[in-house]
Length: 102
Image: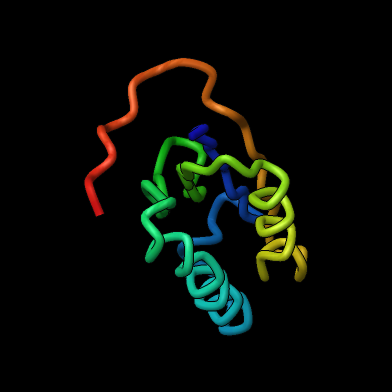
């Protein structure tokens, strides 16, 4: 099982504070889009991160199928509406919490 990290970059640093109603609806669809990965346990974490440059989205996913992940990310409503971009990287080393028995 490989671990991937993605960063969702919004269209502007103030996006979290001043998104339009249309952008808010896209973000609701974005969260729903990833729900199957959350429910399957493959999504380790998904959510907004605040730092000095603004707010951006973080996702950490465990999967053996990088192509499937990249295709799924490419069909995210944030990407398809050009509301933001998603960059994906593969964690080369590190420590990931033990997988729970399901």
